[in-house]
Every structure is written in structure tokens, then in C-alpha cells.
Length: 292
Image (cartoon, rainbow, N blue to C red; front, top):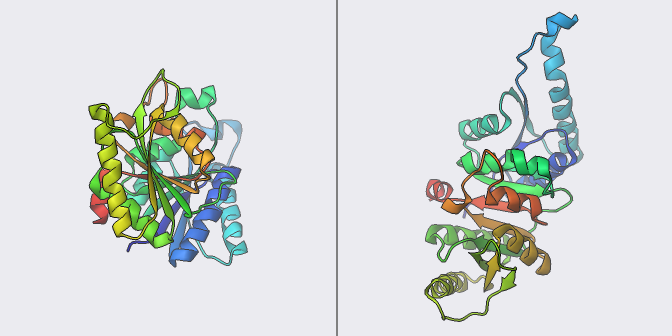
């Protein structure tokens, strides 16, 4: 069974970023793995010499090096050694580059629980990394610890990938957690509601068959599992179910509907990151294929 042993953590100097680092260290200690911490500073294209700055490089690197120094202090407080990486450029692109170059198992990022207009218009780094990175990506809200006692596996379709479901069950086995499998029937205008298990229509029947299939796989692996069907907007359903059932970890399957939106608006993934009360772990077909 595969554990996360090679972890890359992105920090930006914020409290959510440092909290994500602490949680990643705990995860690496449990898995007997290592952690690399990266800070990416935006490229400076101006001319600092015009304002009398002699050591331009030091001015540009200074804040980033201070952030990495704080990261090292956090790691030392946990009796743990980390590697640090300083880079410049577009944050999500450099994080993905280093994740691929180091063949990491997991990228960990801090997340802010907010639906502010700034994030609505501009998106965020975590959303872009999720869509572009070949490794698994975990977004951790500030003050939310990583836990595996109650795992929520959520997907927005009437079917989910068999390999993805098998990977989720494997994670539940590794960590000894129980599973809630959530199928979300997308609805823009409808209210959030739990749908009774029945076979009145084809789409609902397909979802129920998928939930039953996952239940059989989980039962065979010795994992307690309950399948549930909800209707509503995906990010709101995930947040509501996670809060009501005290979920420790929500695992999300990526699909075509969750495509990125780099212009006006945010993708479903961006909204889910902004509203979830617990850590989110994102899996997709490219990650599953690479792991098997």
C-alpha cells in the first residue's frame, strides 16, 4: 500500500500556509517520509537601480528567504528536518514544475475559507495547482487538522472511476478510517437536499448502482462505508455533508465539469476549496494511472 513519503509544501508567509506545513510534517512523520518547502516570489521586471538600490537580488529574495527561515523553525519545533526551495515566477507554474521534477507523491497547500469577490474574479493558486499538477494535491483550511477517521469520497456524476474508488478505499484501509461515499446530482437552482435512495429515473439509478458497487468493494476490503445521494451545487453539498457528519478528510474525484476557469468566475474546485471545513484531497485519472 502506498503512503505519502515525498511531500512538497507551498508557503507564502500566511498562517494557512504555515498551518499546512505543520500538518504535512505530521503526515510525513507518520509515513516516515520527507518534506520539501517551496516559496515562489513573483518575478520583478522593474529597475530597482533607479531608486538607489545596490543589492537588487537581496531586496527581491529577502522576504522569501525570511518565510523559508520561519518554515525551518516550525520544522525544528517538531524535531523534523525539511528541504527549502526558493524560486521566482508564476506561483502555480513553479510549484507544478518542482513537483514534477522531484516526482513528489503529494503537494500540500494552505486554503482560506472564503468566497470573497477577489477570489471569485481571480481564482487562486490552489485551484490552478489542482488542475495542472500530476501529483495528488491536498488543500488544508487554517486550523483544520488532517484526520482520516471519517473520510468523505465525493464525485459529481452518476458514475465514478473504478481506479479512483479503489484508491480511496486503499487510503481508508491504510489509515483505518470509515468511508462516506457521496454522489452529487448537480443543480444550479435547486436547494441542497438529500435524495432518497430509489430507482425512479435513469440518472438516479446509475448513481445508486455506482454507490452500491463502491460499497461492495469497501466491504470486501473491510472498510465501513455508507453511500449517500444529494442534489445541489457541488461545493455547497460537500461543505454541508462534511460539517454535518464531522468529516476529517474529503477526497474529490476530478472530472470534465470541474475544468478550470481562468477568466471571470471560479471553477467548481475553487469554490469547494473556499467553502470546505476540512482538508481536501484531489485525485484524478492521471494521478491514479501514475500510481498503479
